[in-house]
Every structure is written in C-alpha cells, then in structure tokens.
Image (tube, rainbow, N blue to C red):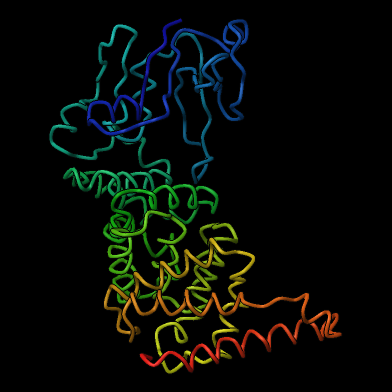
Length: 379
C-alpha cells in the first residue's frame, strides 16, 4: 500500500499557485484494507475514501473503460495490480498527471512539468475524448491560468473539435455543467471560459441561449469588464446574461442547472435596466416598484449586489446606460432610505389593517420618495 499526492495540489505547488484541497491516490490496496485502516467509503462509482483524521479524499488507483456516451458512461477497474502510471494515464491533462511520493519525489510519466514550463494545457492520452466534462474543465483551467500565459495545445483543440462533431457535448448533464461553470466564474479570467468554449465550437451545445456571435461578444466583453471589479460568481453570471432577453436568461439558467438565486439575480438585473439607466424613469412610482420587486428590504444583500452590478455595467460604457455609476449608486441609496422611512405602527393606530395597511404603506413610501425627488435639484 503506497500513497501519492496527485492532481491539483502538485500542479499548483509547482506553479506557485494557492491551493487548499489535497487529493491522494492509493496503489496496491483494496477496499477491505482501506476499511480496516479506518477510512470511510464515499465513492458510488469507484472506491474513494475519506481519511479518518484529515477527511481528505483517497482514491484507489484505477483504470476505466468507455461503455456509453457522456461522462457517466464508464466502468472502473481497481485491484492490487493497477499501477500509478496506469492511474495517471486516465487523467485529463498532463499538468494534472503528476504525483508526489512521501519523500517529495515527483513521478511525471507524461511530461506535465515540461508542459508547465511551456505553459501548455495538453491532454494526457486519447482517453480525454471519452469524457465531455473535460471540455468544460480545460476551459476552466484556461480561465484560471490565462494570466500566467497558459494556452491550449493545438492537438488538444483538434481533439475537442472532434468530440463536439461526434456529439459528446450533447450528453452533458446540467449538474456537471453548472459545477464547472460556477468554478470558472470564480476564476481570475472567467471570460476565457466562454471564449475557449467558443474557440472549440462547444459553446452552442453547452449554452444554446447564446444564439449569435453578437450575443457572445457582448456577453463576454461585459463579463471581462465586470470581473475586474466583482468577484462574486453569481453577480458575474448576471452581468454575462445582461446581453440576453428574459426568455434567453431563463433558457440558459435551466440548461446549465443554475440555482434559483442565480437565475433571480440575472433576471432582476436585466428586467429593471430601463428604470435604472434612464433618469427620466426615476419617478416615485417606478422606484417603489423597483424596491418591491427586488425585495430590497427583506433581501438587502441581494439589492446591494444588484446595485453593484448595475453600477459596473454603467462603468463599462454599455450603450443602454445614460447615467454615471456614481450618480446611479448615490441616487438609489438615497431613494432606498426614503423607502424604508415608514412606521407601520403609526398606520395601524390610524385604523389601517390587512390589505389596506399594505396599500397605505406603499402610498407613504411613494409620497416620501416624491418629496425627496422634489428636493433633488441636481436631477
């Protein structure tokens, strides 16, 4: 039983890149022995175990065979005879197929260190073409390491083209698409994720809501700008979707399996653009409706996210916007303070109740904002 550190921790240590998680591969062992050592099994498709103390993942060395389309279409083989080199051969990229033993010695049978020096993302073997999730992963790595100068090897690009032509990307499931998309949106250069998929002819299958090159260019350009100021993945996604119509956003979010909070943030960002970016729309009635529909009082953090997104879109010189980020932010914060300035108890004492109370609160809020608007001589 020999244990090796593998994958991301080895790669990022060589790159001087921060990492948190460590993955381990165990050679010359069995599920029975792992259980006897106190490891806890967690893998459904192949033997993966959690360390009894660190809770890090330890996977038995394995080989695999393609049996059906998609990323689930594999059978796995693990026994005492599977070598470290055989396990590394099934991995996606050469930079992810480097192992380290307990003495700190690197085992690099597929020249991952050379590709790190050349700043290349290159597939290990033809087995890369058997799993469409690897297209998403390599696009994510392109987004992560773009600032270090990494590019995708030409032969790997050609292999991905072939995968797309054979329809492999049509077998991706929403859960895995969202996992990779969310991670990519957290990277330093998230726009490169979408640019890479476009370069590999995979974008149309994975994100069919992006119907035209113009849609893609606008969305990616806005994401490139926004990601310099905003690190929240959901906010970045909302900005990316800003170029789409409402039904396009709904379609895209459903296709990638995005959670409701991400879909709602993107929809609200787009739905209220007309009010947000045109000062002639800053009426008391419109502003009250904006705060109501965005649930600004009960979800203040989300409204702050929306305001940050809107301000950064304005800062990008988007053609829709007619107001500066500073004026937009200052105005909306001031209007929200007036919206909050209502005491329901006072209205209850005046005899309002049930639906009448709700209407009275709305009326007072609108009156507050109108009076405040009248005092804003700079508008």
